[in-house]
Length: 112
Image (cartoon, rainbow, N blue to C red):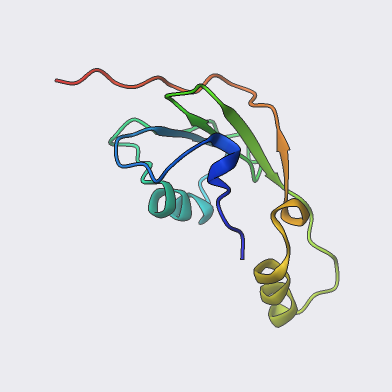
């Protein structure tokens, strides 16, 4: 299964909005981003730039390090079980391309 590579962004688990994300779609992967990285629209660290692509950008707000993850196409002709096994057993490199971020991510919101 895809594992968040916290070393890629030099992160520890974030409770303080350290991570910001721009999702380029509103599909089910956004739920995973909310749960795993504690990003939400209400906290201001989850934004949508609707391009229709299965891509998301992530930023460590403390260091400024950011990446854009784009899933690679899955092999064709898979049934549901093979599809499930593929995504639970492939490496991060097999699953996603790591690219440069396309848009600047938002900074921390001021405390009130």
